[in-house]
Image (cartoon, rainbow, N blue to C red):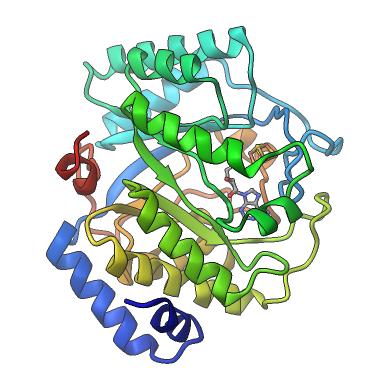
Length: 328
Ligand code: SAH
Ligand code: SF4
């Protein structure tokens, strides 16, 4: 598909054809199962100040927390006993010896309690190569780090000047060389973002040869300074579905998540994401009383997802087929 065709589809030229093609591609390449990753929101302390994010360092209105080892182990046991193939541990960005050790301890304990069976994905921001290596050696094997936007110019307009696009990109390359399955993604409908930017994001993801992708609508947070998107919420939702469908066609055998932000806009958002090409959902398994404190964007859903409508894979890691084929 050419850049021009991608832009036409993003404009909504022919959703019916696009969604039929992406659904057929998905069925043929990765099948119809939905893989579950139990999402543990480990903590909301963050050293960074991303302009869009509700848990940015300068937001004084949020109460900060970090889960204890026991709380994480309880959540991971729940995932294991419920037949989830894997979990994701996500948090604000912290860089310290203590934090690195803490994650090693958690990963080791979770592998043990699940007889090495639970897959572990980390999403803990930018870290040094040695930190990534320690976490990989402890037993985690996938990492999510969104590039947020592939346009260095747009990236600099949504971050303070000391958050560098090149550093984020370098981290993605380090994660790859460390041995992780690498997931990245972008936000859709950022202030100033054009359909051309979004088309370039898709081509960037393809050229980076990623294994997994999570992308979803930008949603304003009342205590974050970035401000309003020029797209309506409905338009951002539609664009997100088109982005998922187009990525499935461009990268047929990767794992694509139907993200929580889709569900924040439409209660059937995740189902719609799955229908047009996504094959992963990340049910929140954070202890209920702390979910409100991990509010990345306004009205982030806190309730559990009803899985009965999904053809879920039980006890399967659901590794990216793409990663297995290209095992480096
Ligand atoms: N601190 C880590 C992981 C937590 S943030 C990191 O930044 O990588 C996880 C993701 O939440 C970010 O990558 C960003 O894409 C998304 N996010 C943050 N604020 C958002 C908002 N206002 N709307 C939509 N997504 C948002
Ligand atoms: Fe911190 Fe991640 Fe939010 Fe940026 S997006 S402020 S790094 S939690």
